Image 1 (cartoon, rainbow, N blue to C red):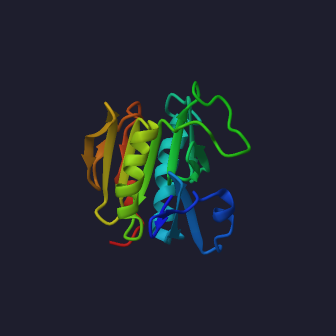
Image 2 (image 1 turned 90 degrees about the horizontal axis):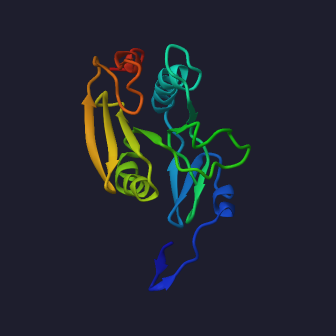
Length: 192
C-alpha cells in the first residue's frame, strides 16, 4: 500500500498484476505492486543451472535424498501479498505434499534470489525483510557478477549468514547439505 498526499491508496490486487504489459513482471508484497524488467539471459541461465543442481537430488532423488519440490519463479500467495515469485523456491514435501494447480499458499522452506543490477536493491531491501516476516527458513543470494553464493538462515526472526562461497568452491550449503554443489558449473558458460 502507498499514500498520495496523506491519503491511503488501496492495496494492489491480482487485477493490477494482470494489467501489466508482457515486458514487465510484477509482484505484490505487503499490498504494494512492484514492477521489474524481465530477467536478462544471464539471469535466466543462472536460475536454470542452480535449479537443476538442486532439483535433481532433492526433488527427483537422483544422487540425493529427494523429499522436496523445487520450482522456478512460482506464484506464491500469503496474507497481504496475493502473488510474489522468488527466482527459485523449495518446499519440503511433508509441508507441501502435492503441487496445486493454483498459486501456492504455503510459505517456502527455501528461497534463492539471483541478484542482477536491476533487482539487487529490491531483492535485498524489500524481499529480504518480507521473507523473514513470513517465515522462510533459508535464503540464498547468488550474485552472478561477483560469482558468489551467500546462504542465510532465519534465526529468531533475523537473518544469519551461514556461508559465502566463491566461483570455484565446492560446497554443501544448507538446507541441501546432503549433496556437494560445484559452483564452477554455475558460471562456466557465462561471460567473464
